[in-house]
Image (tube, rainbow, N blue to C red):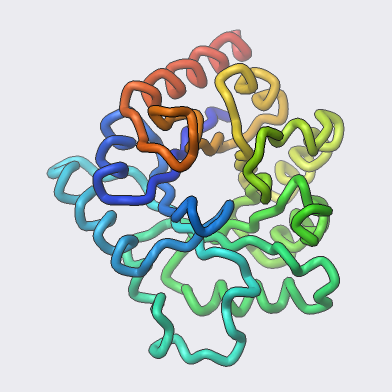
Length: 250
């Protein structure tokens, strides 16, 4: 399986820069709102329009959108009264929401399905698990993987909730990650890995055969997820990913 590079952006300008650098998937989020911070509906729409204009006759990269945490979505709010209506994700292929605070919530998987139905135009729903589940008070990665399988999700994302100096591999052992990978393969679910992924971690992460490697901070000019995306850094990361995959396959 050839892993694709997903780059998270926060503005139309960053989306164009990420596409120019060779990002395979453009993910829209607001870093200041958390690990899976939800952007405004206007930002989501503007990015889709700007990418379409930028790519011209070429097909733009697939779009993904972070929808914040599940508990941020009221259960009884009609779609047409939300500040983020279903139409905000027109043209998006993927969407996801985090499960922080849901560890002791008995019906979190049902609530997740209801949110998924709310955005029924999105074909590729992503089940997002936090490797640092204890800090996030979230369900464990294995629980989310099982829910992804049962709920018909297209992708399982394993990320970190708290953005500090720790990385995905600080919270999830190679052995545990391998078991999650095997579960995804059996279930036909794509595995995406994030969590302060650095260039030096590409080869170790590829051992889990992910379909997607997701980054932001590593391709920002400052190396900080709150900074600006750099086309040169995106291109460098994509080249390193391709090289590592080629070496692994040879």
